[in-house]
Length: 117
Image (cartoon, rainbow, N blue to C red; front, side, top):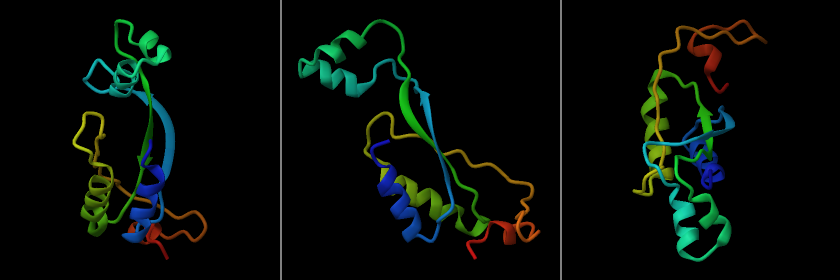
C-alpha cells in the first residue's frame, strides 16, 4: 500500500493510465506481518499485542488493469520494478484473458474499447 502513488505514476509514465484500485484485507503464506514484528522489536505495545497466535489479515491494495496484449509485458515489468523490495509481501500479479470489452459511450469493442484514446 505504501507504493500506490509511485505505482500510479510509473504506470502513467509507461503509457498505462486506466486502473481500478480497491482496499482489501489479506495475507500470504507467512504467519507474521513483518511490520508488526518490527514494531514489536522496537517495543511498540500495540504491535506486541497483535502478535497473538494465528494469521492476521493486513490491509492491501488490489489493482485491476485491463491492457492490450501489446502492453501486458510493460504493465508487469513496471509493477515489479516499482514494488519489488525482495521481502515477503511484495505481492502477486495474475494475468487473465479478457474475452471482449465494449466502451459504453461509443460502442467500440475489443482493443479499441480499452485504448487510452
